[in-house]
Length: 215
Image 1 (tube, rainbow, N blue to C red):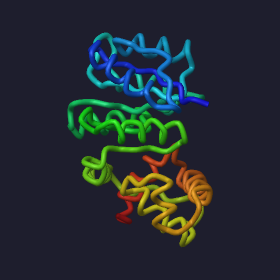
Image 2 (cartoon, helix red, strand yellow):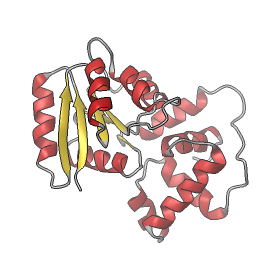
Image 3 (cartoon, rainbow, N blue to C red):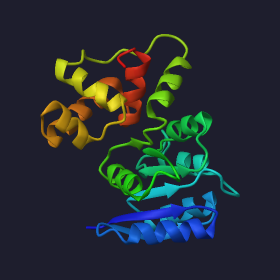
Image 4 (tube, rainbow, N blue to C red):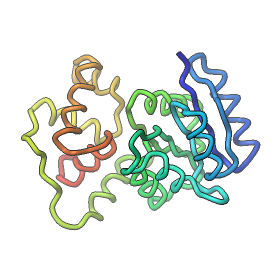
């Protein structure tokens, strides 16, 4: 089945270009396009897409607030959202991830990385542009006051091994190849890590790894 995507960007030419690029993929279908964050929230609730691809700077409501309303901590059934922007600014990345975004890309990332991020979000993964991953997470960790929270149970040696590539922005397939285990085993370890760390997604797992100096 196709991954159903909702696009939100205030520039018509960008919406058109992203729609053409994604519709050309055999497993992705664009089901809606919004010109502002408010319309994006409305269409998301109406169309129930599998993934949202949101710009940050939009009129009426920006992409971060739209992400918070659709994927924030208080949302019962969060929509996987990939934020895409021309601005490589830490404050935007922090804001997007804290709002619940599953991924963060720059608009010059290229078609391959864009489609990879869409598929990763649909599969429960998070993909952040490699150019900002390590810098972002390290900066976020250093900005947190006090000691990092402790896991509810000690991590196993294998979970510790999985934790490091997650914090470096690797996908499940890349981690599986690196550690010579199956993708399903990686997912099982991630589920256990999320439970022990009380994390909603792999981005929060990565942040915890940086907070505790594991990377």
